[in-house]
Length: 521
Image (cartoon, one colour):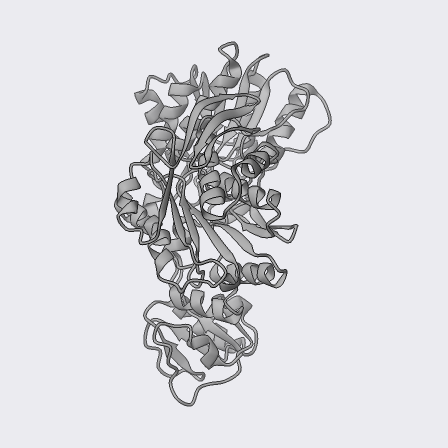
């Protein structure tokens, strides 16, 4: 592709004279540069791409793009105002703007995004619509499932556009994309022309990155404000925003949306409302009021909180995409489980064992409240969770408080401590537990090694109890220092159960905290 074709996607659109040439690819990683590539030097949280320009040129970069003056280079240099935005736009151009060939549905929010994306995707499949899906769990393209990597939120711009191109080239007509706040702030979805955007909720999260709740909320709002900025597609002109009427940010978001708005909720008046919600260990049932009338909906996913995800998915599918309420309800009833979301682990033990991704105070409370319905007051709730390092410190005591308020036994443990002291993280959590009446050694414990914590929880469980491991869900690694160690809560919980039952099972994954080797990493 000619360089001029790529740069025509940029806001300036112009190319300095005399430097147009053939480009063989786009990359922001100097380690992956191939001869003839354009290297986009993006600023990062830990490193500045401008520092790696010499390595990129040595590897064969034909053109470099960055935000600051860079005199004396042996290849053409294009200065841009925002490198990440430029990367997103030229990545889209490189792949032929695939989002313009499909109906794009974006789902954002703090909690429930992945489940809502999966619900929408399954409704579209049930309706006979050829759809693809990209979430934090993975991508599904024409029936092929692909892992999107360790600790991935929204994929980077080039990877994302590559996925979208695969979908469009395969003849898919719709894409459901999970859109994170990092993905929005870092312009990973630049070059994506969205047609429908939906919000699950906005609660306190990622303030280590965004600084304030207001800044975090404003980033989320960006998905909705951009709905009216791209040209309408001839095959889908009716762009729409789907908002949670119960969410405190509802009025703020509605004031910024310039396209028609459809609402959902259980407490405030809404276009799609849920009534008579009943949830137990077998699933959830509710009556959904739609503009076309009421319809009963059942789902194998439990927890009252999942009724909000169901309402959001139905609002998107029915109001924005024209699926019938009956077809949507059928798809929800038959939907398979989402990896790492209320995933039950059963090796024949006399108590329940569950893995869930809940890692915010709001999500943890919702999940523990749901667990309470499963015990039916006869068993205890034993919760195992931690709080990530280099992330919002103020949520640490709030997470522990949720455990004390809603679990009978809380086990505080490692969850991606990164370069922070795990001892310090657990002390901050323990302080929150004590402040809510927790008694260490009785109602809560600190066990730094997550494998040992799960073994302790499993060994402590009695008939009728529920052991739930929260915070890791589907993730396949845990970060200590800057190293990702293989870790899967589902495998680890199976290992702990197998050890208790004396049956064959997987080996417990090993972390730096295992075998008495503690943190300060």
